[in-house]
Length: 531
Ligand SMILES: [Zn+2]
Image (cartoon, rainbow, N blue to C red; front, side, top):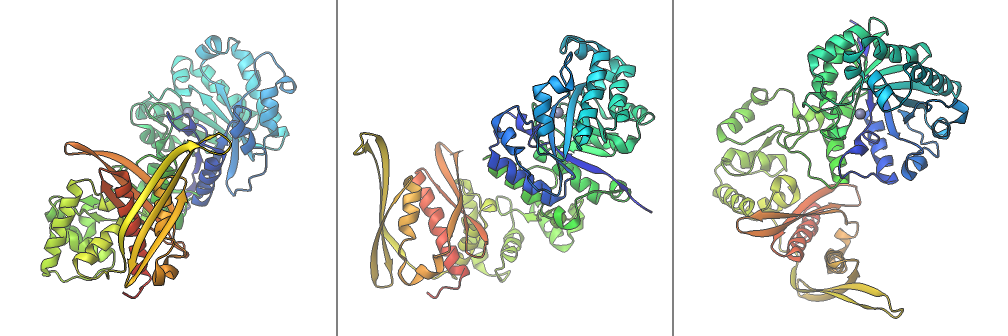
């Protein structure tokens, strides 16, 4: 049976940029567009050229993506001609493969918001599509408020969509702009639309105001639509847009869709999905949703000991899909309630062989429990967990001792009379019988401490020469009665391998120091440095 092609359109960088607290830089946009491109998303909507300097710059040059890189903007303004509308001109000149226009499809909005006539709105749609086609662009029309408009005046809503389709728009996208439409309504209305406009020219753009944007997208596909618009992690205004990170694995892994449709995302790319989702959160400096379907840390986590032992015997007993297909992993939680089998599974995962009856396994479990109670999160810091396990099992040499460190932060006037903050760290290290003192200036206390610590480790220096910090995250936790600081540090070596270490303390410098030390020692262990 031949499968039909279903297209994915990502609007993380346009509609997703409306999320409260999200503000993409040009670098962010290029990095995210690159990830979406690699994932195999058919259309990436980069933004709204002319609306802000970032988007104007983004579309100022050819970005050379495989995806159909799409610019968003308004149809020509009422009462103007296409040649006399500066906003439209900017959009038509944007370096984009496609243009996605937005137009009102609800006569009430045409009257109240646009203050124009229904006929003029239709003319604006026709003229704008024609102008973009003349420029050689693929054209899409987002029919704003389509579902509410259809309920109020089906003939007019459909006329807006039809105007764009008749003029040669590749896609007519039905938007549930207010996000309040329910799946059965979406299915029914899309079913009506595809009687007039072929389904392989119809898209769905759902918002999540009833927590059913994903369900609405699938309802539209069932009714015949063949393009789904959405965002990574469901980013978007208010409650967000349809979450492509949930939609993609469902399309790939559930037979109802997988047997009927092909999408641009292949199996290899699907295995990067969890990473893409987490990388977006990291870029936004927000904690990934642990409970996110498919990609969340808890999506395949089991806590109770009885489930853990069943999962070890046959994973399918407790999982609806195999976690590795989307780049997630099965997790048998090392935390409260966890049994010995949990720890053994974690050890196996990080590649440490241990005997089931070794009494030190019980000791390790105790330590993990104690530490998690005061704020450590070993699930987020594999390298620190591995070190803790190796230490408990007596397998980490004592490479060096930091006998003393000192971090000094000073604010003063410099020679030019400017107010400056200067940070310096001094570290005393003992390697075998050698005592070393290193000092370094940094752009902050942790940076200075890191630079001083890694400046001279004597005979071990060569093993850490390629080590660098790639991410530093701080979170204040309220564990017990006092606030503590949890620091997660991500490091990378010369081979591009990455690992995360953790430190927890009431003092941010102490917490950072622990995480820095773990990172260096982890690198020495990994490199097989001699004791
Ligand atoms: Zn929207």
